[in-house]
Length: 301
Image 1 (cartoon, rainbow, N blue to C red):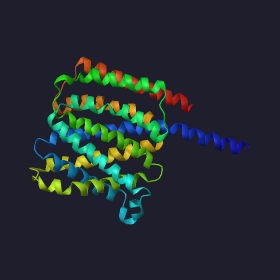
Image 2 (image 1 turned 180 degrees about the horizontal axis):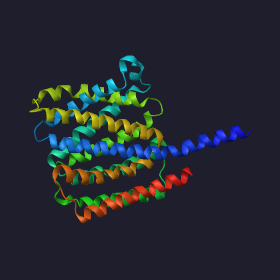
Image 3 (image 1 turned 90 degrees about the vertical axis):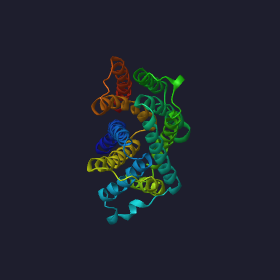
Image 4 (image 1 turned 60 degrees about the horizontal axis):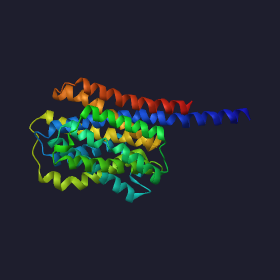
């Protein structure tokens, strides 16, 4: 009886700690997405956007096929929900295309302000679709985090560039992608989800990518193009595992931590020096995330 009781406690402890691990994986995923955005913004000056998108998925597929040795385990390509897999893949493609188009025309601050409406959409949809309802404390943390983003970005929506519609489209695709990812983790493997989404997106983008082809001028540009697949594929693999371990409303607010990486990469890559307002806003975002982390740790203990 004592052994059974200990085994039950151990299993309960592992289950309670899973959301914390999921949060950690999502933070790493957001870092990868930030690196992807920064790389894309750098590349659009010399390579057509649609070509970058295509090569991002081609390198994603090559990397994942080699990493998971699909030739030795072809069952990874099987799925119990093929329609959802295809819809999810096109959502990922939509995120990438519209986001890369947006960073071509808009400042990162503007695209970030719009993209960070996603946690509201994800949290709202997670209740009726997934049965994962967010309580008032979680909603408050989401609102506080979004206010922190607005402090950083200070968007001027009155004279926003017409290309802001690209960011809105990317944000909506992202919200649906997050919900579908959470749904599919119940039946399909993380590796299979990663590979299938890459294959569908790469095949769909092949005609467009080839039609605008411009040969990259040097090895550095080729390396960065390959890196988009590493950052994108790696980030989405971590994203999938995170949503296997934690409910969507728990993870959604941590998307805001991308603002911290945006400030850091903006300074390191593009020479954008952060202002005091930037730092204050980033601190608010981090504080809202730490509050949710505290609540999950308290729940786990």
